[in-house]
Image 1 (cartoon, rainbow, N blue to C red):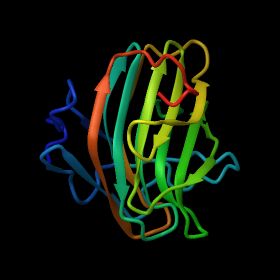
Image 2 (cartoon, one colour):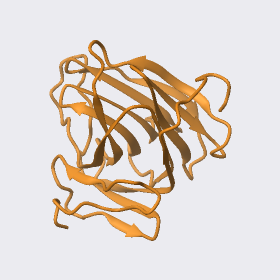
Image 3 (cartoon, rainbow, N blue to C red):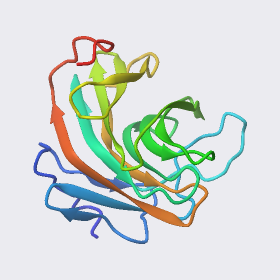
Length: 207
């Protein structure tokens, strides 16, 4: 794939451009479904314990300003611990966040979120999900961000509500990634992609 050309999903009013280390297998666009492949070890996590590890993966993103809601059904192929499909908000290499459909070491597929500030990531495991995947959403509300997950794409449960610090970033790059930190690689499919610039009125009422 020519990384400068990007990907155009019909439901998005912008292209998605490749950043980070390119995966050996390029993206596949099947109508409105995007399939991303993660190489072995691909990950985005800046360990608070100081382990340098691998902390970058190919991502397909575009900068957006102002309020927005961005969602998709995320369906990874779960093979190894921490294999995941990711909705990402990226500011710079030291400031970014993600919400994932991920396989944990107990064999449970679940919603996982990470917020990275000043070069240090946190890590928060949320509720189990069906092995086929789940709907995930990123919303911006002024200087705040909200992460949600849903089993049907209609009723949303809050995962995180946070800021990226002061001053709030003018633009955040939103998009997708696939990860396989401990495995030999995997794929993640993103479908039912939605985007609008409507401000989310309430982060906890299911809307």
